Length: 391
Image (cartoon, rainbow, N blue to C red; front, side, top):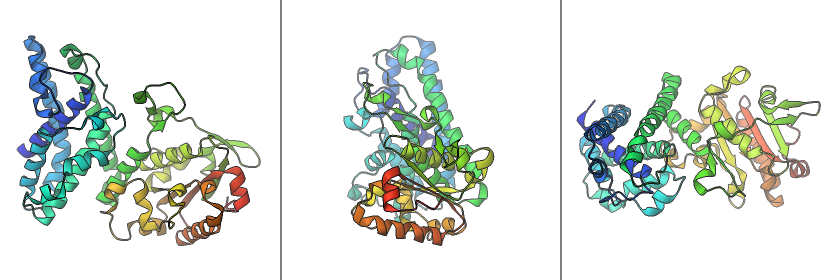
């Protein structure tokens, strides 16, 4: 493991510590992650706890470094060392806006924008064009790790070293869990998939793997839950009997789910997308693990042109959409390795329903072998005729 990767891992750890301690005011700590560990250790006279704090932090930093090392080693960019050093120093001295720390569900895009900063400042570093692209890719990678891990961390409330020390094991286990999951996905992908396939799957999971509760008195930080925890399997009537929706998915290549507002149609789409992206389908749906999910929310196209296949990834993976290989989406569609999930047919303005019907037909004709899911409210699907008889 390179010294550069270790240094970058330590800097990422500083950001995670700041995320965990955002609600407390340890003396001397402002918004700069670099000073956190020293401040932590200065808040106790217990030499054993000081050593344990340093050891646990070193373990976590090494884990983060091991995960970043392949990205660094595989790069052929001539100024990659300068790029890594610049990002390491930027993370060490980064002043994190209070708004970013106080928002429970921050996005990787927000962190990426913060790390990249002003375009002119990046130009002034004198990196090659390939070096700038590598820096942006590193920022993508680091930002996603920060978001994935920090979402699992407790927000400490007491200004005590004891509470911080007690939760360092939570930090360590969260890092271990996130990085192990990434390794599992990478190994399952094997040589069949490109780096973009792998990154796209991760983006889908990050974007869709949460259920947000509305209309409750919960604190903001308690409104979001992972789908795997909060999702309840739905039953649907197929004209003859009630079945679990996952059983219905095994019986057809095209399916319309109709239901009233709030009946769980959009949540079902999220669950399908996450299961597919995370390769967690079992039994009769196991073959779906080799497929790539595309989620299209028609409400986003109420007043603009409907998306072509090359635009499909932008809905949930806009951060990496610009790095998509040429014809990537088309290849998945034509090879039958796509699951197309279309949400909100009922939300399409009446004047555009015929266009949507034609658009769906074009997708079906372009990829006759793939799986498709289309979701809309019952009454408007019947009235509009969009795919209502395609079961």
